[in-house]
Amino acid sequence: MGDPVRVGIASAEIEATLRLLQVKRRARREMFMELRAMEQAAIEVFENKG
Image 1 (tube, one colour):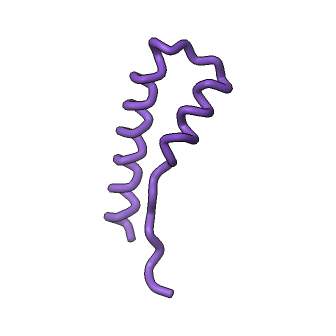
Image 2 (tube, rainbow, N blue to C red):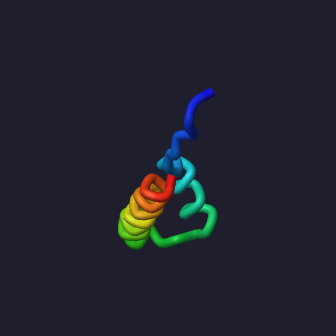
């Protein structure tokens, strides 16, 4: 089987969630980028603990 591979959240899922939460269009890009930064930080932590 091998080691688990950590992957991020699909972009389409992020966009759909922001729309469902009725986040204003102006704020979506910033929120998307912030989420990606948090996601990358979490992946790095998991990789170093693995």
